[in-house]
Structures are given as C-alpha cells and as structure tokens.
Length: 543
Image (cartoon, rainbow, N blue to C red; front, side, top):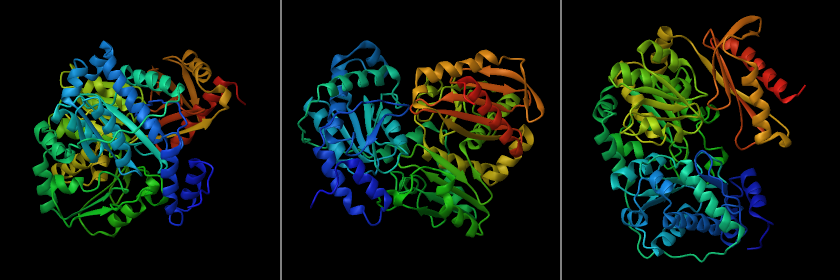
C-alpha cells in the first residue's frame, strides 16, 4: 500500500473526518505506531499518561514507560515502595502485575509489549485482556497483586492511547509513584533509545469480572440479590449504553440476563462511531429514545465511558448528572442503608450534598480535582471513611468499595435505590430537593493567551483569594450576596450566604481558566457565571 500520510496525526485527521469511509486507514496508524521511534514527554496527569496513537503513543514509547516502571521497581526507593504497598522488588516479582486494556485499537498488542518486558525481569504477570478500570482495582486486591498496568486513555477520543498505573490498594497512583515514573521515563526519552520488543513466554490469564463479582459480594455495600429480584419482579426497563467500551457484558454477568435490560453499542468499534466516547448529554439520544418509548413503570438509563470509570444517569424525565447523583447516593447509603462516615467530594461539585450532610450531621471533606485525592477516605484503615466519594466529571465510588471511580457501581447502586425507595431517580431527586433545597450547578470557562499558562496564570488568579474574604459583600445581578466561606484547596471557591457559589481555577494542562458555579435557581446561573468571568478578567488585567 502506498503511504499517503507524512505522520500519524495527518492520518488520524483523515480517519476522524470520515470514520466509515476511512476506517481502512487504521493499518497506516499501526505502521506509524510500530515504525515511529520519536521520543515524547511523559506526563501522568490526574489519571495516567495519554497520547495520540502513532504520534507519541507508540510501541517504542510504551516500552520505554514500561521499562521506566521496571527501573522504579528495581531502584526500590522507600517512599515509592511505601506508596505502592510493597516491601521490595522481590515482593513485586512474587505478587505480580495485572496487565490489560480497554477496547482501543492495538490494545492487545501494546499489552503484549508490556507483559514481555515484565516477564523478562522475572516479574509474574496476569493478563486481563479487555477489562474495565474498576475491575483492575478490585482484581489487585483479590489477587493480592503488587499493582496493575491498564492501557487506557479513559474517555479520550479514538486517536488516543493511555497508560494507567495502580498500586496494591487498587487506587490511582499517587504523585510519589507517578513523579518517579516521569523522572525515569523522560530521562530515557532524552537518550532516544530504541528498545527491542520481548515476546511473552507464557501468558497467565485472569478473569477480572469474576474477581469483581466476588469482591462486591465480600464488601457487602451493594445488595446484588435485591437488585436481581427488583429486575425480575418489577415492570421496568433498563438501558445501558456501553459506547463500544470495555464495560460490555459486565452487568449481564453480575445480575444475570433479562429481556428488560437493553444494551446499546456493544459491538467492536475502535472509532466509536465517530463520537467522543464520553458520558455526555449529547451522547444520550438513543438511550433517551428507549426510555421515552417504554411504557414501563420503572425506567433507568446509563451511559458509560470506554474504561468504565465514568457514568451518567437518566430516566424518562431528566438526565441526572453526577453532581446530583452523588448527593442521592449519600442520602441513600446513610438513610436507607445505615452507613455512616464522611461525604467526600471534589471542590467543584454541587453543594446539594453539603445541605444533605448538614441536616444528617455528616462531615464533608472537599478535595482537589482528581479521584486519587479521595484515597485518605477510602482505605479500610482510614479513621474517616467515606460514605460516598464523587466528582462532577461523572466519577463515583462508595463505602468499602474500590478506590477507583466505578461506573458499574454507579449502575448497581441506582438499581438498588429504585428497589428500596420504589421511585424512579428523578422522583427520588425531587423529594430530596424538596427536603434539603434546590441547587443548580454548571461549569464554563475562558481561554487565555498561552503566555499566561502555568505558574503565571496561577499567580495572577491568586489575587482573587486575597481580594475576597469571608464577610465581603458582592452584587450579583442586583442581589447582595455575602461570602460565608472561602475554600482554596484547588483554585478559589467563594460560597455565598444563600448557598450559591463560584469557583475559579486554572486548567492544569491548557491555557484556560475554568469556572464552576452553582445557583439556587435555573435562572440565576447566568448571573453567577457573569460574576465569575468578571472576577477572572479583573485578576488577569483583561478588558
């Protein structure tokens, strides 16, 4: 075949412009991924290293990152070993590493590269094949493995590959680990090595779904039998949109087959039908139609991302974002299941959960953005254990459950909610809001000049927290609002006396400022956004 493209980026542009007509060009992407030896900068963000397949996510660069991890194991620095929950390199070799992937293009091939390098060093490996992120988290604990390597870029578009690392507690790797991986990998990248592939000698397979089912049965946060009985007994329809991801077939294995459960987009499709594979409102049209067309009394729809760590819920009345669902989960687990502890939420999430927690006498812990920041509240040995932890970007987990965000948990707890309360989700939410108050969250932002990105942007925005203090008054669309709290755990969050708030934080990866806001009425959102943008422009000296 004649090579038509100068690089993988140009090839991907052609593929994504016409996914049905140019699907055959994936063979060119594979060629670029195998032949391109150009190094890249490795950055583990809030959830792993990601890059475009064939451009910076190449076979050679995956070998380099895997080799950097092996070097980190051998180095055995005490802070790293402690963060991993292992004693030393020999302990890692004996306990082993779980390796798997989501359903992305070349996933199995990239996994074989990692497995071969680990086996060459005498490290036991378990091959999970296609698996969801929460299954890795549960599987690590069930196998007593040292860690896992999950080759997924989560909800990123089809042209991306990714590399997640989870230590022995099953949670996302902390900075003690990721900083060391970055340091070694980028040092190797500067040397531009071309590493020889190593073919695995023996592939020891593991069924992570089976382990996950045993895990949730042992943890007892979810009542699977109650869920099965509900589906069998009640007049219900459940629609699960897998968006061609690694969650396909999981719910069927957990609660059994049922004609009442409709599955969408379960077939193989490396290009996700040309859509961004994320649990967004715009991706829920087909799901919404199934719910609207059904005459069933109980209706639940969910959409998941490819690696199963994000979820969005709906019934035939409304789409329920995680800002609401996380608050509902707190109420359900505490009031209906008697689970006590703290409510853990990222700082940009709705204060509906705060209102519920205040009335139920539950402490609230607000963290920086990033699910790994919930670890102190999710460990079984923690003094303060989370009843629920969630972030506004569709991630959730619960008491005694995985340290990773878990879309499967999100489906199961929604079904148990319906079973116990006898209500559809929108009705349950309405009842909660009638009791605890109405809250309307949203988010937006502005782009800034690239010269402002990084520390310059952080410094300029810090003037907001210096200017606005508790007790200060603002005029928001003609209404006087007094600041009752200033939270600076991640950007600056100003909470007002009516329970509304705004948060301004710089993007960690782009020249953007992000606004997270919440009003007490749908109509009030615009005024809070206007206030947040004005504060930002004043701080940056923009007109």
